[in-house]
Amino acid sequence: MSVSEKRASIQADSELKITRQCELLSLPRSSYYRSSCGPPRMSPENVRLMRLIDEEYTRHPFYGSRKIKAWLKQQGYNVNRKRVQRLMRKMGIQSVAPKPNTSARRKEHKIYPYLLKGMKINRPNMTWCADITYIRLSGGFVYLTAIMDWHSRYVLAWEISVTMDDDFCVNALESAIRRYGQPDIFNTDQDAQFTSMSFTSVLANNDIRISMDGKGRAMDNIFIKRLWRSVKYEEIYLHEYQNVKELITALKRYFEFYNNERFHQSLNDGTPAESYWGKPAARMAA
Picture 1 (tube, rainbow, N blue to C red):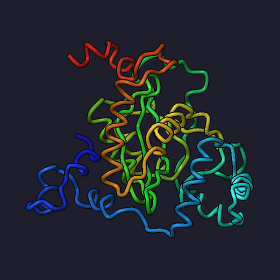
Picture 2: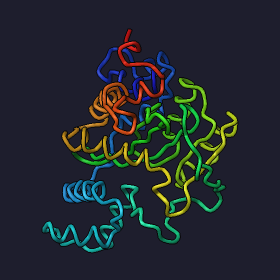
Picture 3: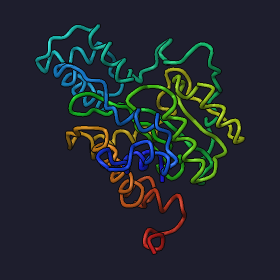
Picture 4: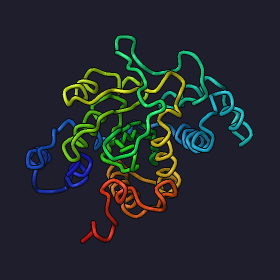
């Protein structure tokens, strides 16, 4: 059971105390409270603007704050660029168009070279990748990270957090390694969550080679970017989640569908599960 599934199974109104439920599930209390306390509350206007920015950015990820500002004005929202920039920073998004000094990383963190250029990824567990995206709720927002197998597009693990710390990324990584072993190479962008010692040390301790996208080259990690587009258009934008628990339940259902039922043209109309495990879905179910 993943950390997200454990958190979703905890009942706040149960006679059994939250502390005891966490102990029985081997779940750190901090991990439960980080998600259950809910997202930061924001003004209805900012929530509405962030929803619009998120949807337009998903359609046009090469849009920066200037173009987003112009698009919002076209929709009847006359906001200045500084406000758009501030909201985009809160959401953790930026234009994928190449430009200098855009990677949200810390100077003391080591940056690793990109190892996948020209490499043929032709089997599961050869390369995994990870990324973070913004997910809106009715009164605020949270962050979602996922670990994906590059070859099969299989989602190995995912986590939700109300803050952009690195704990939820490390939790997802450790969960994927426990359940599926380890890949030869792990690829991410240069964001602080993935360049942190707590994240890279898990990779190094498991003899996993570390690869990072070049600065301003979001397309180096294109497959997980496509995953976010699928998640948002096929699930997130269709619903209005009231709290983190509702979102976790919905994402659990969606990723089960994505892995086991959703056909991919790039996989010869097969599913990620079939590609990862190398057997038809019917035999897998049996």
